Image (cartoon, rainbow, N blue to C red; front, side):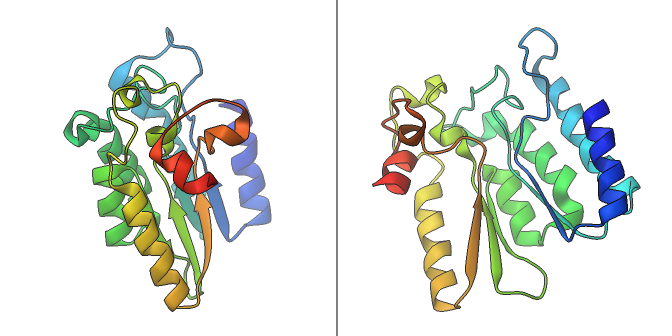
Length: 190
């Protein structure tokens, strides 16, 4: 947390308009923190932004280390992962619209216009694209209906002449040399 505390001090000094939080708030080691205990890290980070009276916006996505075990997110059973998506949504509620809060709470992804602009911020739940996620082995389709949702959001943005920034934790795998036949990778890369 020392590095994060130094970051918060810089935020207080520089007062940025926006912060992108792209996950892995919990430690990288499996043995240190287990299960629902991992939520305490992102809750503390959100609390630190609020305590710093940060007036900008914070947009966040889940990292692979928030999951328990790391990189394992059951994309086929939303209710099994609800403990994680609900707590993450609650941590970010201060900065999110009701719609962004609700989709984060249910699926772990969101779309929101940045205040008084034509910039749409889209945060993806890239656990549905993580080649380490064993839940994708049997079926690498679009289990969270995220690709269809993303296509809708991008079409809507195009019609409304909005610029779009897409946030994610795990990038398209074929760009990183890994092999993943996930629907998200095929949609984003091809």
